Image (cartoon, rainbow, N blue to C red):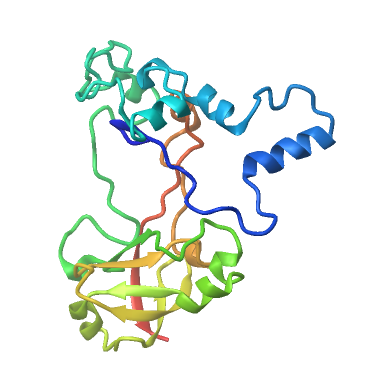
Length: 250
């Protein structure tokens, strides 16, 4: 499913060996544990039909999608929030939020200077001049399997932490591509390998998230107070993962 369409993805290959679907495994486990009513559907297709039974899908079924060539437009507006009913106390867009003020948050959007950088924008005023960003890669498997190191195919592709750094920033620090480096700030440090690339802008460095020790560099402080998090229908809280750092040869 996308934001606009529903797609039927048919099985491409027959199961190899004793391979079974997750549904089949859970269903059999429930039967062995005698969990009555755990799977009330007659088949896996019937379970999918139950999931699809919603006005926005036109109460689609697997059979109906198959008959339509495997694609159906969703019955949704192409304009976000067409009713203009917003989740605010006034039910309107609020540029100045009294609710935010009551929760101890800025009533208007504001900018906080990152720890390690002064309000002066001049390079000489910065204790740590590189903004650390984090993200995902194709070899990243959430936080499981020891950051991909327990899966041989992933470990071969990404065996150690690598920091993307712009050529200008690398040259200023006498760092060559592939060099062992130390990333540090007032909270801690982390050793990694430099990847000098023009795919990252000067002043910013980037690393795949999840590596052990990386969070030593970040504050990890809550972005929102608990009372504010509770206002959202689904949220587990947010922590700050950005940081100002410096990089030097290891």
